[in-house]
Image (cartoon, rainbow, N blue to C red):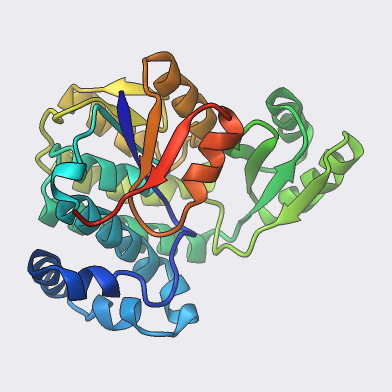
Length: 294
């Protein structure tokens, strides 16, 4: 089985997507369509050299979504998935690629998601930190025992988790993680506490938009972050998509389930190679590659 994976926030880089724009008339059309839908020229930012402008959440999320979805489109016959999965934001790209969601609706939802998350970050300050070298249960226990709001947010691979929550609680948890034996506890340069209860305001806003959007059964199972298993029912997809903003990204569990279900080849579709690296850390025997234009 061949699984296609779609990256999330953090995979962006200056100049991303310019090669697609120049190589394909279809890609060029989709980029221009995106500029119209968003109401600003995201291509100018994506194709430019201003890394700081690209880091703004309201730009980053649609930029990564566009790169992934357009690449999956212009891959042509190379894109024949038995399953798809996306890391956080990447789940929206996966849904569009699997034809559960139209390109236009997917981009609109991603734009609304980015704005809602940015507003939540502005209203309720928070942050995240990477914890290396501890078992999942130890990280979870430390989070529960730390005063304030702090939770395990991203299960990226064995020994690599990201925690999320109130700034002070994250600082306290990082110290406790080190005392518990963590190799490193690194605060991350992010704008807020993603995938934590602090994203509840964003979840409420996005839920209304998702419920009003047409989502149909995909052409293959979509392995969603919240449940870490393949979903094909449109109503379940919506429920999980809404829950995603405040729930942890179960990436380790998702890849393990894909392997259990028979996936042996993994292709990352989008900017960067972060997910390829995580898959290898989860299972060294897995075959991986990057999506390329047909």
